[in-house]
Amino acid sequence: MRPGAQKTEHGRPIWRGGVASLALDQIFFAIRYFGACQRGWGGGNNHHMKKYNFPSAVVLGAVSILSFHPSAQADTFGSGSNSFEISFVQISQTNNVADPASGNRYGAVPYEYRAGIYEVTESMITKATASGLVGVTAGAWTNQNQPAGNLNWFEAAAFVNFLNTNSGKTAAYNLSWSGTAWSMTLQSSSNAWTAGGTNLYRNKNAYYFLPSENEWYKAAYYNRTNYFLYPTASSSVPTAVTNGTSAGTAVFAGNGVSPAQPAVVTNSGGLSTYGTMGQGGNLREWNESASDGLNNNANAIRAMRGGYYPALAGTLASTNRDFFDPFLVNASFGFRVASVPEPSTYALLLLGAGAMYLWKRRRDSL
Image (tube, rainbow, N blue to C red; front, side, top):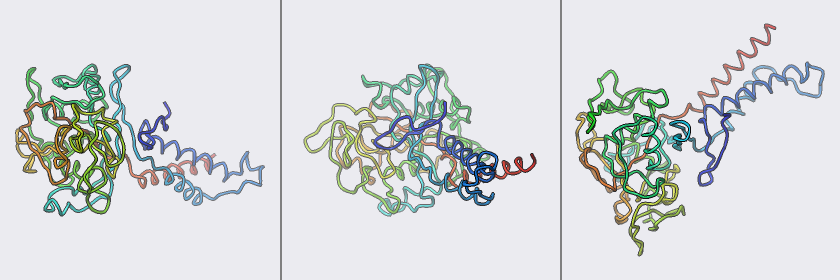
């Protein structure tokens, strides 16, 4: 199916097929259009059409490409009735500094990546299981569009591995399923992720992964210049709600509100600066990182962030940090997915220029 804006998420277009696919369509439209202009439309007989030389075509094609900048993309997994989508936003501003309020420990990420807009849902787990995922038994809620709870760190990692292998990519984690329990071995130094420091949990070729504590923190609190205290694009205490999408709200206990369960993920509060939802309240979220940040012990205590629906406002703040045994299961434990970025606009620009050059050579040889 030709990619395009099939729907919107909170006013943001969601492009199916990814930014790269749609931009390629735009590139080749530019090639055809500017090529026709260069010839003179209709074989050169329509002299009212301006003729462009090749450098001009490249520049105009570049403008065409640069004008395209969707704010979110949805990736598809599974197949048929068991297909599902995960929507991502791009997290940019590379080489940002860590949050001074964290003692300069958290939030610095030197590369671009994508963060899941929403928490992973029970429906996603159900459909992934029907498509071959084993050893993951998330539950706790009656609505399949509520966040997946009741799972440990290894189950969250196994779901991420499924996303990779289901789309023909390298598994993020060295997991083994015994039939009753998960275990993990560290990556070799030659296979380990090294962007931002050596990470022996994550494979260097992983496309989807659990967000590290720094990746999670940046998506939640960074405002492209410095940091907010809450993941609702503000340093003011959010307004507690049982559900909704109003700016500055989150699903937690406060101002007379006491949610009995988490909200459906697309209705779990206001957005962060980058456009993620529910990073404060709803469910706590597993981070990939060990609590000491070293990631050199497969069974080390893991970091967890975000607070959850019956907790108070302080648990949503950047200053709050939880950590738990990765084998522990609790109804309040959920997660979201992160990913490598779509190709940058500049990379696509170079691709477009190269394609135009090849087109010109082919035209001149005819």
